[in-house]
Image (cartoon, rainbow, N blue to C red; front, side, top):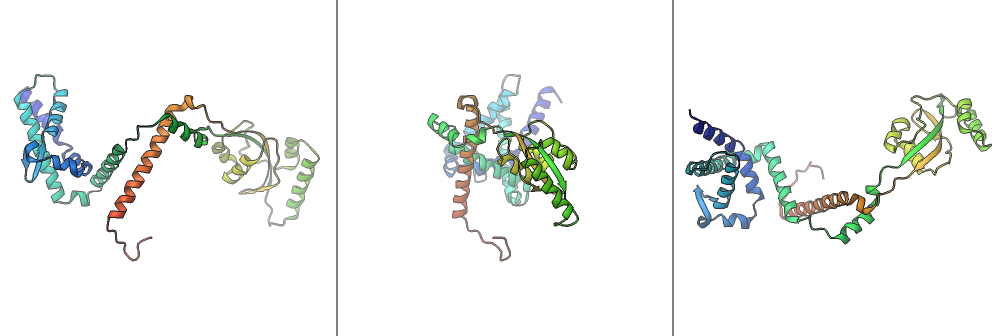
Amino acid sequence: MNGDELYEKRVRRGLAAAAVLGLLIALVAATPADRARLNEAGAIAKVNERHIDRTEFASAYQALLSDKTKAPTQGDKKLVLARLIEEELLVQRGLEIGLLDGDAAVRKAVAMAGIEFVLAQEGSDAMSENRLRAFYNKNKQRFAPASRLQVAQIFVPYGDSPDDAAVIKRLDEIRNALRRGDDFIATADALGTEILPPLPRVMLTPNKMTDYLGPDLTAAAARLPQGSISDALAGATGWHFLKITRNQPGAAPAFDDIRGQIIDALRRENDDTALRDYLDWLHQRADIVLAPDAPR
């Protein structure tokens, strides 16, 4: 086998590799108007009742030439047309044997192609300056970095029962010490119980603080102003007095500093809205029947 024959064989295999999936996606993404244009006058070939459009042929031919180092030949055009015909045959056979109905990978790929088609029609790239700024002002918190907290705690483990006298006495002793203005850390050393891992004496994001306090206590700490001390809060294994040493809320950067992020966020929101509207329209035009025991 000479070099040209080997090249042709390799190209033919490469071009046919994604045939079924590629054209199934194209069939779904094409609008009725697009399909109407694939008539006999604009076709370069006909396979059963389906026409192969000259534009599709030209695109495939250019794709082949971009990967070829030698001068184009008439054989290249013949090869591309043969590939498109074989691709159409495979697609028709795939539909005939129910690939779109039974192959999960094909169905997912077609669904993704449908989503891409909807988003392309939306044209979400057109965003005015006023719209961007309005979106930023409405959603500043979305662009703000996470707040950070530094918290100290006094821990008292639960007793054998909810009304354990020793635990109640200890909690009251801690309350009295804090009301007198005793140093929080000294009170923790004198009346608290060590809990591992200890809280770091640095500022942490709420996500990191959750590793030490759990979600409920972290949420409670985040609501307290800097310098405040909570009463005993119930945790997973005991009572916690929390002192908010520092509470630094996150502040959104200036508009011009994160303009690219704002554009991306607004585009995603537009895409989500467009897709939701399109799916609602599909639901309205579809005849959907649920089994009696199907979830509603």
